[in-house]
Image (cartoon, rainbow, N blue to C red; front, top):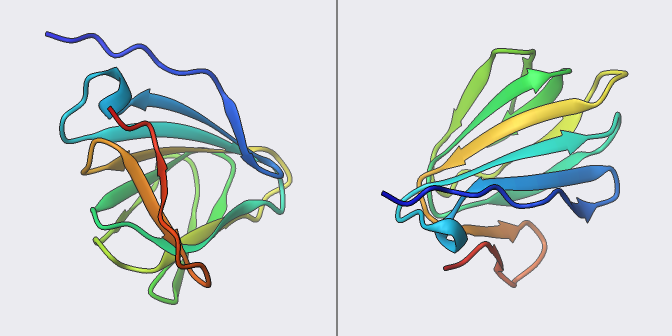
Length: 124
């Protein structure tokens, strides 16, 4: 059995910090799990992944969209994002939003809408 050692918090973009918990870089084969701390007004721009993802709000509230359908998520609520669905979120509250994400692939790969490159993190 391999024990995952979480990474340090890293700044992804203005107002967003991320900490990897489980990924290929620490032994995962089919899962990528991470947390994000998102300042009020910040979030994740429209993007997609090749794998399914589950987003769960732990603290705060978020406007989450999946293929243009918006949902307000509060602590304890989750949304399932199908593979290749365009999605994103914004912190609509007055406090830091904390999000837990689980992806069905071992490394984080994303394509942001309007960009042609693939961003990759936490590869083995």
